[in-house]
Amino acid sequence: MTEEPNTIAESMNHARDTTRCGFVAVLGAPNAGKSTLVNAMVGTKVTIVSPKVQTTRTRVRGVALQGSAQIVFIDTPGIFTPKRRLERSMVAAAWDGAADADQVVLVVDAHRGLDDDTRAIIDRLRESGHARCVLVLNKVDLVRRETLLALAAEADATGLFGAVFMISALKEDGTADLLTHLARAAAPGPWMYPEDEISDLPQRLWAAEMTREQIFRQLHQELPYAAHVETEAWQERADGSVRIDQVIHVQRDSQRAIVLGKGGSKVRAISTKARQEMATLLERPVHLFLHVKVHEKLWDDRRHYAEWGLDFDA
Image 1 (cartoon, rainbow, N blue to C red):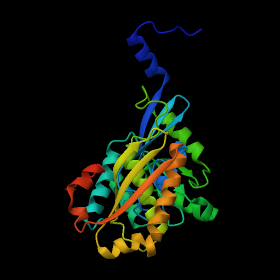
Image 2 (image 1 turned 45 degrees about the vertical axis):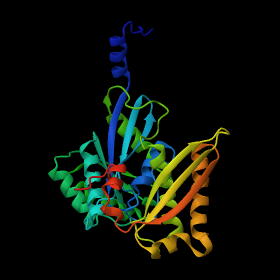
Image 3 (image 1 turned 135 degrees about the vertical axis):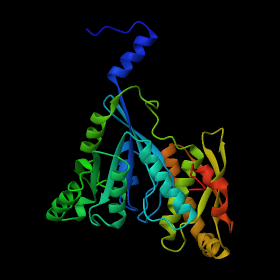
């Protein structure tokens, strides 16, 4: 029979001995499938997913449990060569996430292979002293086995990786083995988040992300990535529902017209899809009200960067 701890100090030592916790940064080039992987690991949506590149703008933490281990995944923006202030801030946030992590997972789109962006990431990881990173070859269902083996050998030759996993994050094929590996590598220690917490993203920011995802999905290539969603009000109602008021900021009148659509058709479609997803994930009715405003110097406003934890001066 296991002896029960008698003091608070003994209880803390007992927790450190029986639990594990680790922070895992998920890096990769744009559209490699990082957010899809994090959502699969956590078991629900904590970060937005879109077939378009550069969807994730800041670090989003998703919390997964595997036995006695708690794994905190840091989903980062795609790393590429930035040209604008917002892009520089996004890439800086990604590298900050790597610096804060105990383990680094590099997600590679197996269909694209080791492209220029991915090779640049590998080079910087080596220069930064990261060793024994985990390589995840994603979207393997789209690639022939011979191509995968050659890609794995090419990546292994860099000397950066201690383990290689071939997965399909979308189909959750191979993700369980990856989670088990990361849990075993986590250091002994107490959990950093409550057992029922799956993300550290505040509700207002999470709701804004749900709407921003639908902007990408509904408008396809019509609207630049500069659109920004801000949750202005979150009101809990007596009947258990919630009212959410949001503003979609764009930079020009022509972009506002695109978001609104003919007779308001587009913004209604965005609102309907976002509301349905929020209601499903919150498990209660949601009343969503969207407004579209023009803000010509949107990304010259420090406030928006601070809201998302981005460095305006990166």
